[in-house]
Amino acid sequence: MWNPFKSDPRKRLQKKHAALLAEAHRLSTIDRSRSDAMVAEAAAVEQEIINLQEAGQ
Image (cartoon, rainbow, N blue to C red; front, top):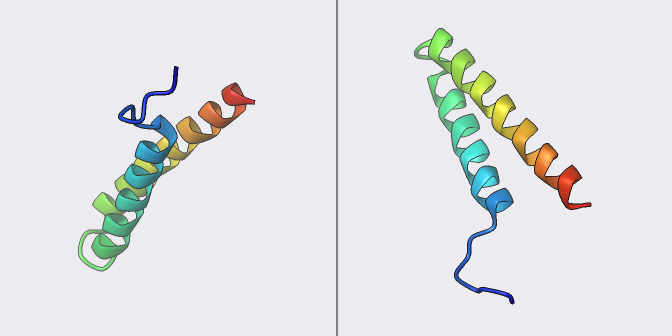
């Protein structure tokens, strides 16, 4: 049965991915090492999104 209150994990991960990239961009002129760490974390989240999409198909 469909539950309208259940969140979609892909949407949650996409929001997290976008937030990480935005923060990495902001930090790119301030602290390059923290920016690079956030980009790496965003890449890991992106891989999770890809894995969820492949599992759903």
